[in-house]
Length: 405
Image (cartoon, rainbow, N blue to C red):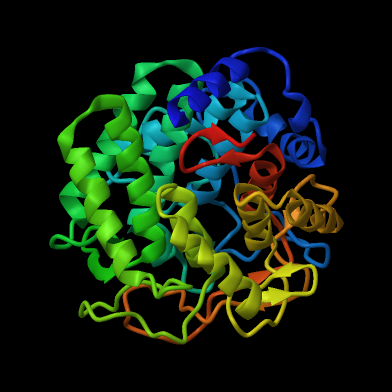
């Protein structure tokens, strides 16, 4: 039945008209924000953030940054909005970047690229000129490669393959999944975090993420459905074992520590409670994690990123809106989406947070060198948050490529 649903969705999307249920503010806002940047371009990366209402410009570390995760989400959301040609521009940039790296020739994607059109040579990484030190500055996390981000890029390319029938997108998605299998396999029960640091010497991340393994499972399962290649079935099963290990009856742990032991039980994240059962439809007991999120992560009008409940995380609240649709509670979904309309900005994008700053309890440095909880979200227009709102409103599951009834 899932294959039939995907086929029907693909046939609908190949038409030129925008689906009636996608003609709402979130699609319109996304298109308003990014369509002028995509027009007439063969391949484009879209900047992830725009300056907040009280900012003249973005911090240097974000000023040129197009995160791969946000761009993959945007490509999927554009397909959900019926704008396949615009989605192609981002998909083409992802394909180019994976095969045109300035240092590595193994087919990896970095966590971020420089926003703007992609040229013929190596894909440019984000950066800025440091006038005080008189050097070009880059961010070690942005230069690195997250396994989950590679998987999200593959999901975007599989979505484009489904919408267009073009084999190039499928073959590129396969290459990305093959990179994960070759470089992130961690024994028999999951995939590790990826790589971190500056070129050419990067640190291998040995921890495993529940979130990443949900992404990898979705890609591997999708590829197995399309190709019947047993290595993708094996990869899906491997990722599933980490997800099974992380489930605690009504919630998920973040994954494992670098030494392979379980992550701290006190560290919670909303997306970790939602993504596994969005990505693995045949695990109904995992949906108990939505109730856990309601009890431990809910705030007025939506959800926080973590359990300190210090504010509303717009992206996560949009994810929860989709989750409610998936469990057959459209009223709860609509309540969240109605509330998110207050987060619209003049750019067309939604702010990342409703308050000035949101804590996550996590560190920007994924290598474990420091565990200072310095990863924050700020009240800035955000591509990823807007894309998730589109997916919730259109009822599009990005992990399977199926539109909900």
